Image 1 (cartoon, rainbow, N blue to C red):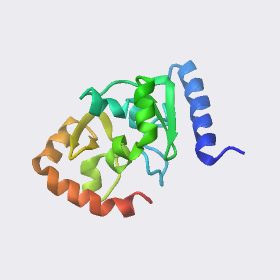
Image 2 (cartoon, helix red, strand yellow):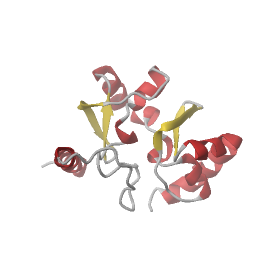
Image 3 (tube, one colour):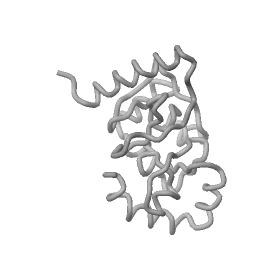
Image 4 (spheres, rainbow, N blue to C red):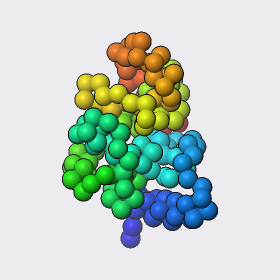
Length: 160
């Protein structure tokens, strides 16, 4: 019998295919309450479909392929190549964005907001996403302070 992650991935793929057929792609919509990993409803993928391993290996965001995926922590993750997928599968915590891909600055303020994978930074080996470029500039004014605050608040926030 399939587990809940497998069923969720199947529903994500079915929903994504149907919405793509209607031409509805690319929207950034907040996930349902209680979701630890931010996934946009249209694509249903972690990190907006970007390959999270590429941030480390290529030093930039790289769009993942719908054919190279892995389900982890209730989300579907896409990768640019099989090697990146295998690296993620072996150590997802090493590559997954902090705070489930929610905005790092918002988490520091005590709430969840979408993280945009085009507004990112790796700090201390961790990938952080922010809502947009302006929020990221604010976050960059005190990265250590905002990380400390978000790290302290995330255990309670992840359940909301």
